[in-house]
Length: 430
Image 1 (cartoon, rainbow, N blue to C red):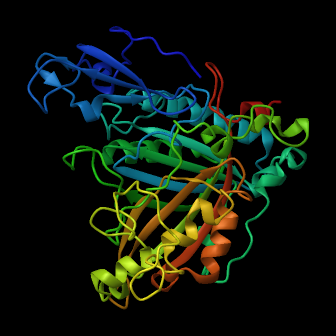
Image 2 (image 1 turned 30 degrees about the vertical axis):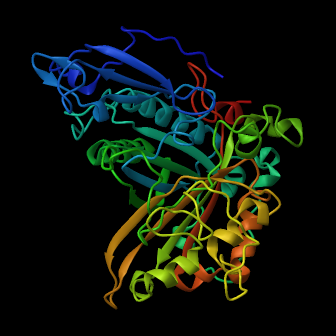
């Protein structure tokens, strides 16, 4: 784990400082943003609530705007980083004729841009000015490689077996044009303009080397919108993410990150410290869901809507009593309840770190909202994380009636870059 030392001077140059409008002032708070030393840096100045931030000449950045996540770390940012308010996920395909050399040059450009933007600086070339008034705003940029990337770059012998295509599931209704891709990018920030600025900058950086295959936009609740920190809700109104693995758990790293040596042959060792991301666009059939009573919805999920507590009682974090029967002799948590079927204890301990965004892409021709979940989960091995759980859900989850899986992708996300490195350098130059 990267060591962290508190400092009052180690504050990155903001976009506003580069314009001569703001300086770095105030105390700097440093905290680990998750396992692996992903540094979260917040510059706070004295002042009334809501006015804290870097200041110069009377201009301030709020605590939300001033929060910074480090680019250089043992692991890439955007995995254990707390959920951000705005997000973009997108995939690129390498252009015809582009190979390993072009991919390496692209990853070098992308990494330089991500490093600068995550520090609150301007883009290295032709900055658009979209985010000039904002601080870093917890911006993270995460990069991954799809199955097809390795043939395109002549690196098929270095493709891990964990990146083999996901199996087909009976409930899938996948659009191949919005699935897979050579390269994957996840962008998150607590400000919409900061997130879009990163999206636009990376798209421009792609130049002639790669073209966008698909792109999706997401959102979460804004920081500070609730009286106290709490688990996020999805568009069905359900608390979503209760059983997520916690970095404090002794087996967290084993479940979420590839061992340092990497399983398999030595040529796969470049993934040591990395993780695998499964990405699914899950449409929620909200009109049908909203026709169900509160009690019916809670039976489908297996948890109360208000608190996220299991139907067997307690709080959100209480253990589900899966054997508990009601007065009618039936399980209090139904046999086909989503929470029961997806519980780690029902899947041989299979676990994944869910880190989704909600989406709403307008109204469909039939008048129904095109909305749902950009499901993103992280694990050391998809065959031990996502796949066994999804197979069980596919066979009898009560929630399946109200959702539709419309796109899918699996990506190898290498470890974080060391100082002076770009993401994926150990693969592309190893």
